Each structure stands twice: as structure tokens, then as C-alpha cells.
Image (cartoon, rainbow, N blue to C red; front, top):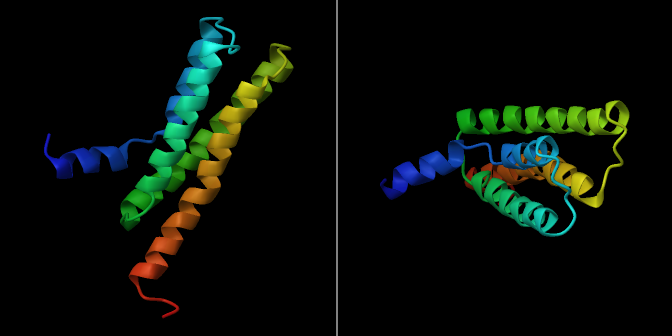
Length: 127
């Protein structure tokens, strides 16, 4: 894989879904998030935040729209999963559940802001 195709692949992957997949996998496998699984989630969350923030730096309009749609879908999916865990399964939500949700919420808020900031800088607005 060349560096441009690797960068293109990196920009097209919705990294936020890794957190949702991890949380669903832990729930289905009935793995408690205390200890090492929770620390893996924290590491994954930090990676996703950096990856999504880096990805939103210099992007085109199509990739920006795809990024926005996937961020909103991830946020809605995480909200549905949290509600399902709390209300249908009666499971108490832990710090790790809230941490994963906070990462998704932070991505939905800060990635567009970073994209707009970069676009304004590229167009020379305010100079």
C-alpha cells in the first residue's frame, strides 16, 4: 500500500465505530469492563479521538459529509445502546460506558469544528 492510498484508507474509516463494536462485543460476551478490558477501552478511545481529530484536519467536502453522517450515526447508536442497557436490561452503567459515550460525543462536536477551522485557514479568512 502506498502512502497516499494508506492515507486515503485512513480518512475513509469511521474510527468511532470501533468503540461501539468493542462495547457491544464486551456486552455480548458478558465481559465486565472492570480492569484490563476497561483499560483497553480507554486506550481505544484515546486512539479514536486522535485519529478522528487528525482525519478532520484537511479533508474535502465529500469526506467531510461522510464524516459528519457517520459521527451522527455513531452518536445515535451509542445513545440507543446506553438506553437499552439502562432501561431494558436494568444494567447499571459504569464509568467505562460513559467514557465511550463521551468519546463519541466529543468526536461529533470537535471534528466539525476542526474541519471548519482548517477550511477557514485554507481560504485565508481573517487574515
